[in-house]
Length: 630
Image 1 (cartoon, rainbow, N blue to C red):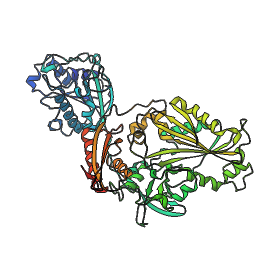
Image 2 (tube, helix red, strand yellow):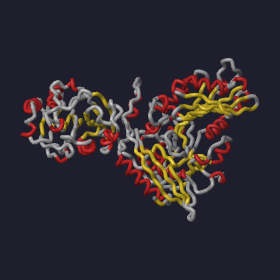
Image 3 (cartoon, rainbow, N blue to C red):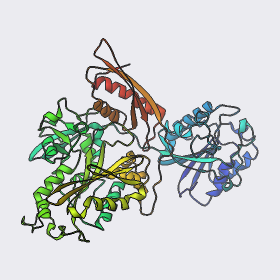
Image 4 (spheres, rainbow, N blue to C red):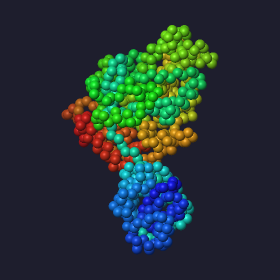
């Protein structure tokens, strides 16, 4: 228990006060203050062997001793009201006598709910338990879950996360003598005990509708980003100087590719919004059912919409400037409509050439930029650039052969969106890195680029699979992380590399969940200081499973269902499984039953919180999708 000067420690559930006395001696030369409490009356507490001398030592060291303090009702203690502590310590809690695990779980839950009211914002709660009691993988041997005290789950009820588990160093506290086993002076077996360290979780933020104004094909348009996606935009992960894992992965890849080919990254600002005309013009296949279709808004001259012409441009739309967080907060708060989604249109998107969508890929924008610069023609014909310096040094880098002569690759990166089912490794938004180059066919560019990517990524479990369209980059358990495709014309090969930077960051940094990348918790980004390996700041979060069953009308759009789930659950649902369907023989109704798995590595998620989200989901489904909950 390392303490810095001017810190305060509250100890609860003390027996003979030997641990508090040991701490008082340990921090006697610091400004750390000790407040020791126990449940018993003073006369009863003094009956414990050594209690009187330990209490005297605490007081002589400047500490405080308070009797008749219920650890489940700390806020009701007059001597503690109005005070906050940097540490709250509860060693080897027990209800007394031969109490079962349920009573002790309830003791822990109520203690956590009480102590957070006295805990400083960056404070810690330390709970020492005997080996096996906690119910975490750190316990050896590990008890069955139902037979443990479920300490992490009980702490989550008070919005605390398990930050660390380490051995309880009883030898460090020389005068410590554990008491209280079955309400006697007899001690617990503390030799293999574990110290559980808990810290506050960030609160869940409600979904907001974010209004954006952009220039799309010469027109100024306004639209709402779907509420379930609002936390993914304007985050600045790729801006210059960022230490976010997504940016670090991009830098790693570009450095590795640049050892073989020159790479020129485009920095033009491009909109999130894309038209079907633009998508069709690029000539590549996209699944329209995976697009986020967008309604345009009527222009409101008094609106406070974010615009791509702002002085502080969005780094995720390929600008090198960072959007400040206070500006994002202002934009999100103005006119926010909770639980409203604009992600779909009630029309056939394939039959409408003028519809808008959130960009599912950067490829259409890249092709437009390259055409404007006349780069492709220059590379294909191997002629001088005649477009008044619009080609970014294409002359110097055009491929002339295969014997070590480098060719120019053009790169672009930014956020893209996919309206996909809720699944563990299905990302509704992620950062794409696109690389494009033109090579002579005899160079076998797909093979060369594939080999380079394999060299860079094979140490992280990425393998290459050949198919009819080129190469796919696959890794377990995340699946597809990239692909390499080509078009051949006039003995030249136009090669495109598309990489999912988010999933690659999961692999390169051994993250347990891609949703960690979007955490606002500073403890996440602090992991990426030079030379530091990533350590989870929330250990052993629990999974909670709830089923939902409802009747729908004659039409049912599952993608709208997924949008509502992401929004109402605050992104805590990691998987949705269809369990059963039933169509009524006489009515135009179908019953669906889904199983939802709630799980979070970024926030404290208790059974109570997950159930609240689930009930909110039922309410929103009823009001928005007009289903009848069964």
